[in-house]
Amino acid sequence: MSDTAEIARFEALAEEAICSIYDARGTDIRAALEDARYNLERALDIALMRARDTDVARIRKQLQRVQQTWDMRFKKKPTAP
Image (spheres, rainbow, N blue to C red):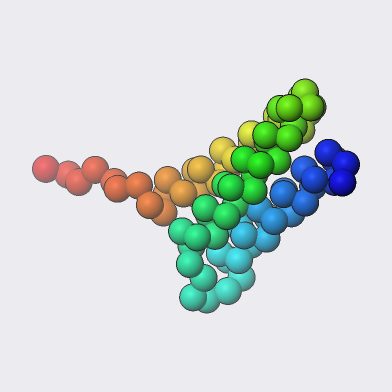
């Protein structure tokens, strides 16, 4: 499988995981976000190994979006005194 196809496959799997959060009830949100992060990290690994700078930048933005979603859902917010 070509690098481009492999990157696209991992990105599609990540997008599917993200979409499942919004499309289905009873979805394990933590698992979906972990799946999205895992697949994007694999795509990023390939892009970095092949020095595909455009792909690296795009995937890092996607990872940042997933991380922000993770932080909003699972990071404890400070409580007011």
